[in-house]
Length: 231
Image 1 (cartoon, rainbow, N blue to C red):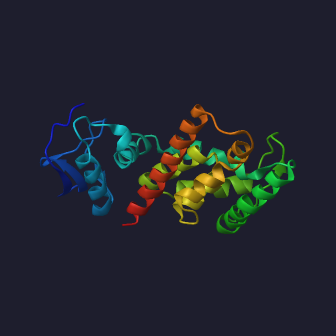
Image 2 (tube, one colour):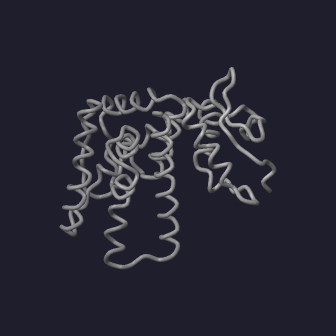
Image 3 (cartoon, helix red, strand yellow):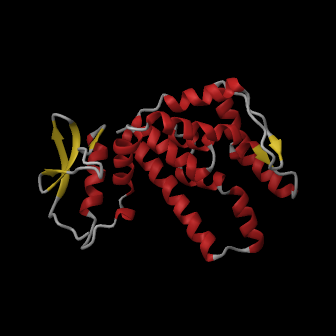
């Protein structure tokens, strides 16, 4: 789609903090008004629209996409989103450790164990650490605790958490990111620990590199979205 407006700017209305294109409120793909929790986020979304040159490229507008997802999808399918996100706790990446080679096992412990320790204390949710790839279920009490942590997020924070968790393969990493325990680069590094270890030994092909760039971008977008939500 070609750019059809001259100026985007934050818009204050009775509904809240929106974005206007030439003074006309932006609508989501679901035809709802794009209303976000604060002016800081609205201004950042307006900046994305102002940054479009010639053609509007949604891929370069991650904040807009996250906001519209929160409004059109998460708000209307909240319970399903909570369940999808919370389900990662039962087979969380950081709970599955290697025994060989020793260098990988040591790296996993150094990076992942502090996150596990934080999550156990933060959510009162002990987790089982195992080796190999055979799934091992977590306790019902811990799964309830993680589920409650997901459910307490509002629609916008839940959107960021869902994206970060899916991109990292870990609810623990996703929660640590949105709570400020990790920054975007640290979250990406933790989530890609095994892959990075293999790349160091065998190199990286173009398809793998592109996939990793996409995951890093998703995590970075979720982190920035959360930062802006805090105002």
